[in-house]
Image 1: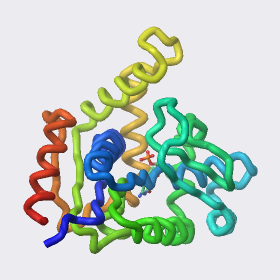
Image 2 (image 1 turned 60 degrees about the vertical axis):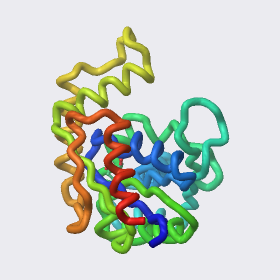
Image 3 (image 1 turned 180 degrees about the vertical axis):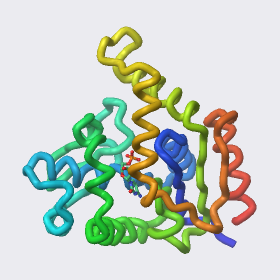
Length: 228
Ligand code: DC
């Protein structure tokens, strides 16, 4: 049997998807696609153009005409990839608080998801892809050769998110939110995202609470080998 060509990694916010997905793609020489970035890019465009994110028809129209692209990083500034919308680099803008607060609602419309999922499937036609999200194994690529579902407890996910923020903004930055705020944020996002997070029945579930990044990767490589 051949090496799995499409690897789906799903899980809730802070479960380690993006860190694991990026590293796995690098090790395999595969394309890394963070599908959350596509929903974020569309949300950024809606906010910029004053489109009401709760208006399903308007959001669908926006999605139909938006040109969202994810490519390998073209600037060495710590980015995992470059995201453009209609040619504009929005890689960092899509991480801001306004987008983070709006993206769950903006990405919840059925019509919007149908369009973005179509684009994700087209991307996965290319050779070798690690696609990361909430519904990749269940909806986007139900025939992916390997499906991983990462989990971690709320507290551990909040701890990781806090560490990420410290890394990005520095330990003494007054803008850093408290642990309780981060925990509350994740709890709220879990709630809003609950309908989009779908575990595939045939996914390998890995609880990452007590595992390091390299230990999670080791487990995934074992599954990869067993399916090759
Ligand atoms: O992983 P993230 O925080 O960048 O995801 C941003 C939002 O997009 C989040 O609200 C969940 C949603 N999302 C989704 O509904 N389906 C996906 N495949 C990926 C993300």
